[in-house]
Image (cartoon, rainbow, N blue to C red):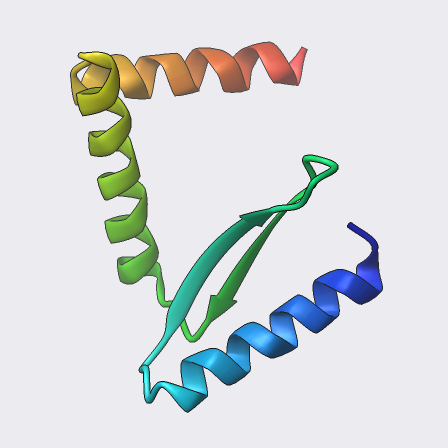
Length: 83
């Protein structure tokens, strides 16, 4: 995704949040080239932690893993990518 496309998507997303009278919003999109973009509109740290916690629970449930196992897997993946 080129910068201009990402900026247009962000602008459209902010309009959706506003047009639907939402307080804030978070979205994750992946284009056909597997390029990802995350969009935030007025998300505070507590709300972001809530999203992260729910994603971790969902991954664990989907794969029969505990939250600790998911966190360990994430930590190992981050360590591997640092090398």
